[in-house]
Image 1: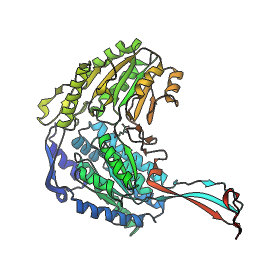
Image 2 (image 1 turned 120 degrees about the horizontal axis):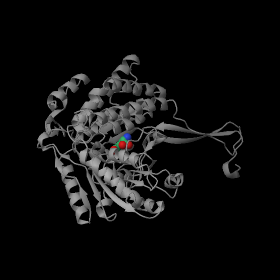
Image 3 (image 1 turned 120 degrees about the vertical axis):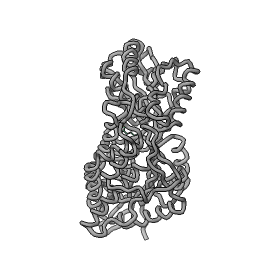
Image 4 (image 1 turned 60 degrees about the vertical axis):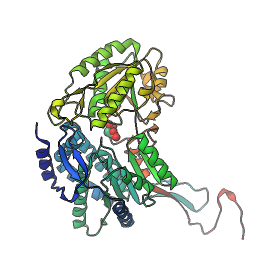
Length: 510
Ligand code: UN1
C-alpha cells in the first residue's frame, strides 16, 4: 500500500500545488486510510474572513456586468482543468476523505458534469414574457445576480458539492466564498488553485474580465460558517451538512432576510415490495448502504421489506455483508473504505448500542483492519433488524448502519412507515408493479425530494434538482432550475401605448 505522504507529494506535483502558504499549527489533517498526518495548516481569523468577504463583494459588482455566456467561458475552463487533473484530484479526495478510488474519481466526474451543465445554462438564464392585461404593454421577468454566494460544505463530498454551487453561482454572475469542512481543507485548496488558474487563463485571453477576489476560500472551524451566515454582505448561503448545523445557519440567515439553500440530513429508505427483483435490489441496497462507508447524505439507512420476501433478501444481504472487501481505499478491489475519524466510529458504536437496547438484532458493525493504522477507523457495515421504527432508526447516524423493518400490509403501509421520520431527502422503491411504483411517486407517496424506482437512494445525477424536504432543509442544488436560487427575479412592465391605463381597470383621472 503506497505511503500516504509520498502519495500526497505525487498528487500535489500533478496539480502544481504547494501547501507552503497554508502551513501553520491550527489544525492537523490526517489521511483516514492509515491515520498518517498529511499537513498542519493555519486557520483564517475572523478579521481576515471579513476582509475576504468584502473583496468578494467588490468583485461581484464587476462580475455581474460580464455577459452570462462570457461568464460561462470561465466555468468551461474550470471543467477543462478538472478533466486534465481528474486522476490527481480524485486521488486527493481518496486520500483526505477516505473514499475508494472509483468514488474519488466519480466525485471529480460530478464536478466536470456540473461545469458542462453550467456552461450550457450560461446561455439559458431565461425569464418569461407575460401577457399584460393593459393595451400597449408588455411584461417580462429578468434574472439578476444576487452578489456573494457563501458555500459551506461537508467532508463527505468535499469537492462535488462545492462545484454544484460554485459553477452555478459563477455563471449566474455571483462571487463565491467557500468554507469547506475543517476535515477536508486540502481538496478545497486544490479546487481553489484550479479555479484561480482558470481565471488567470481567462484573463490572459480577455484582459481584466475576471475581477480580483471573485473566489475566496476560508479555511477554519465552525465560527467561519457562523460568520458567513451572519454577514449581510453574503446574499445567499448554501450549506450542506448536519441538521444541527443547518438549524443554526437557517436562523442566522433568516434574521437578516438573507437567502439560505439548505441540504441537510437524510434518513433514506427503500421499500421492497413482494414483486421486486430481489437480486437487483440486493445489489442496489449494497451500493447505497455501504458505499462511501455509509457517509453520503443519500446513504440508504432504512430497508422496509415485505414479510413475504424478507427472509430471502436478508439471507442474500447477510452473505454480501459478510464477504464485502473492506480496506485501503486506494487498493483495487476495495469497496468499503474507512470512516472519516474516531468520532464517526464512536457515534456508530453508540447508535448500535442504542439499537440493541431498543430490541435490534445487530450483524456486523465491529472495528476491522486495525492493522492499517491505530488512527484508521474501518468497520464492517452493520445490518440491524429492528422490531419497529424506534428512536435510533429515526435519527441519522453518519455510518454504514442499515436498519431493517418488515411490513406485512399494503404498499401504503410501507410508504407511511417510510415517511414517518423527520428527514426527507432520498427514497426508493423496488417493485415490478406499475401501480406500486406510480403510487410511490404520487402526491400520496414518498415525501422526499428524491423518489426512485428500481434504483438505490444514492448516486444522483447532476441534471436533476438535488435536495429534500422537512429537516433536510428544503433547498435544491445542482440541475433542473436550481440556478434560480442563485439569482433574483425582477418583474418588468413596459408601456409603449402613449396612454396610462391602470391595472385592475382602476380610474384615477388627474
Ligand atoms: C451528499 O452526500 O452530500 O446522490 C451528496 C449522491 C451524490 C451526492 C451526494 N451525487 O449520492
